[in-house]
Amino acid sequence: MAVLAQPDEDFYKKSMLDTFNRHDTNGDGIISPDEIVTLLSYLDESGSLKYNGVQGLLSALDRNGDGQVDFEEFVDWVMQTNTGAAFQEVEASLQTLVETHVFLKPSDEATMERFTLFDLRKEQNRKTLADIDLGSLDDPGLLVLSVGSSSTQAYDARDFATSFNTGTTVSSVEACRELTTALTQRGVQYSRVLLINSIGYLVELSDTCLVPLSELVSRRSDKPSIVALHAALVEALPNASMHVFNRLKDPATKRYKYAQVTNDFSEALASLRGLHLCMSAEKVLEQVQDAIVDWGGSSFKVYVNGKRIGTELMDANGFLCKGDVLDRDRLAQAIRDIKVFVLKLLPDARSVFIVQTGKARELALRQQ
Image (cartoon, rainbow, N blue to C red; front, side):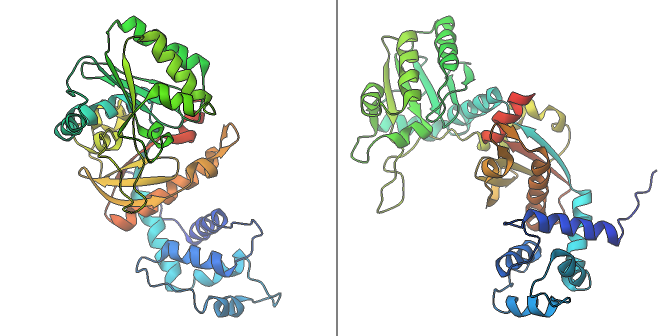
C-alpha cells in the first residue's frame, strides 16, 4: 500500500497565501482591517473573532516600518500561532475530503424537478392546486413550465421532462422553436399550462393567484423572452388555458402571498430516492456521500441524509464568469471554499457531491 507524503511547512505556507490572495478584494497584496477579519473568520471555528484590536495587530506585524502589512509578513506571523496550526489542520482535512463536482445537465434538472413536484411533494402540491380550483395534479392534460431566469423546464404527470434554454432574462428564438416542436411532436392535447418559478415575480402584488399569460405579456412588452415563450406555446397548444402562478411575497409578512407548488430539484437531489435520477451522478452512485451540495448562482446549500444543514452566500456567477468564459482556476478555488464550509459542519466528512447550476453551468456546457 502506498504511503502518502505529509505536506511540509512550505506547502501550508503556499496554501495560506493562495487563500489570502482569493480574499484580497482590491488586489494590492496588502492586508486591510476588513480583509484580516474576513480571512481569520475563514479559519475561526469558534465564531469568537472580533473586529476590535485588528488595527493594533496590523501595526505590530509591520516589521519593515512602511505602515502596511503585506501577505508575506502576515503569513510568517500566522505560521507561528495557533491560527497557523488550525490552518494546517484544515488543510490536512481537505486532503482527505474527496469531492465530486458536476455541472447539472438541464435535462437532469427537469427530471428531478418533476420528481419533486409529482412524487416527493405530491400531496402538498395536489392540495395547493385544488385550493385554487386548478384541477387535479394527476390530470394528463396539465403541462407545467418552470420558467427560471435562464432556462425553462417542462414536464407533465406522465413521463415528459425536458429543458429549454430560454427564461425571463434569456431570450432564444431557437429554444422557443424547440419548445414548439417538442410539444407538437409529443401530440398531447394539453388543456392547461401552469407557469411557475421566476416568471411569477413579473406579476403585480394586487394580482390574484393565477394571472393569464396573455395578460402578463400585454403588460410586460419589455420582456421579449416572455413574449416569445407565449408565442411558442400558443403555436403548439392553441386551445390550452395558460396561467402564471403569482410568486410575490406580502411586504408585511415577507411570506408568499399564495401557497406555492414545490418543485425544487435540490429536494430530489438530496433524497436517497432522487439522486439516481441525476445522470450526471452516475460515477458517485456506487459510493456513500457524506454530504450533497446544491450550488447555484448566488449561494450553495449543504444536505445530509436529505436534510439541509447549512447555507452560504457565494456569488458564483460574478466570481466565476468573465463575460462568456468560465474561469477554471477560480472554479477550483471556489470548490475548495465549499469543502472548507462542509468540514466546519461535518469535521469527519470524507466525500462530498457538489452539483452546480447557474450561469457557470451554462458556460461550462457551452464550452464542452
